Length: 271
Image 1 (cartoon, rainbow, N blue to C red):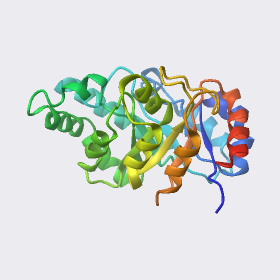
Image 2: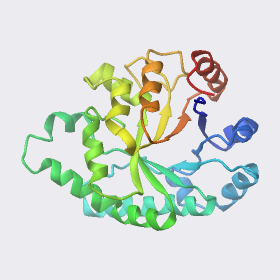
Image 3: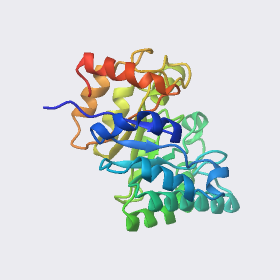
């Protein structure tokens, strides 16, 4: 069985630098240049045109990181829900312009939620209802557009909460994402299970993985091998799935892509 092909999350400058590496194996690519309010509220057409020129000949799986700064998709304020819905629409507009088929969004579950969602009988249901109010229209639009929204763990402690939330939409256009560094932070600092447990819990709803290393204290986005994540266990858990999630290196310093790939190749985990 061939090793999984690893992709990367890149801004425009990163894509310019790593374009040949992406195109050599049509690696999964997540564009991270279209998620800020300033970009979304401005004219991003030139950026899209430049990106499409860079990707001439690319036939891999293309996605973007959607908007997330300044809001949660679980907000209870009806006026803020309208803002969230508009941001989701703007992200999907970018997907349509680029031909992207995936958009990363952020989980609403916080550390506080883990300890307090069962403090009142309606808390869990209310949070699910709030998320439906925020992104329900976007999920329907994504279905029509051929885009999958993938919900990434942020502070999540119990991975089954996010899975239940995604399943409540009963839509092929909403699936799960795992950020390995976020999961490892939650494992080391807030009592969450280890990263491979997050993968197993997601099961075949897993459609996207941010690969980054950390020490379990903070969101480091280090090159793979620099932290303490047990990568063989993570890749065994991924290999056990029928799903084929996009495997995306999301590193703070893009110079870490090369040593991360050397590490994975030497460990026999990826190519």
